[in-house]
Figure 1 (cartoon, helix red, strand yellow):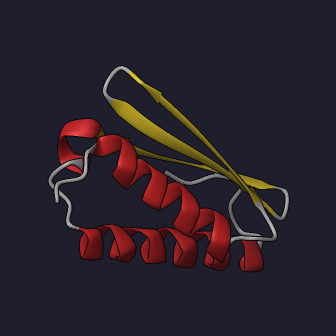
Figure 2 (cartoon, rainbow, N blue to C red):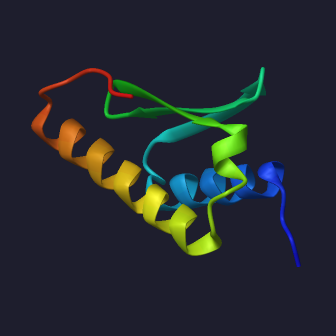
Length: 86
């Protein structure tokens, strides 16, 4: 079974939303880009994935990406050092 960019983006959105349940995650797709805007503890983060790169990622690689983004958001919001990241 092959999954497309939209399904992969959905997996990312679901993963971020579940792991950062005390924050808010918004999603938009435009011009071949998939953008996730995370608001957590008063800080805002934007993460973008190019569609052509997203479709090359395996499900396991997507989970690793989600885990990395969550770790960065938590590290930055717990320290309060930065207001945004990409």
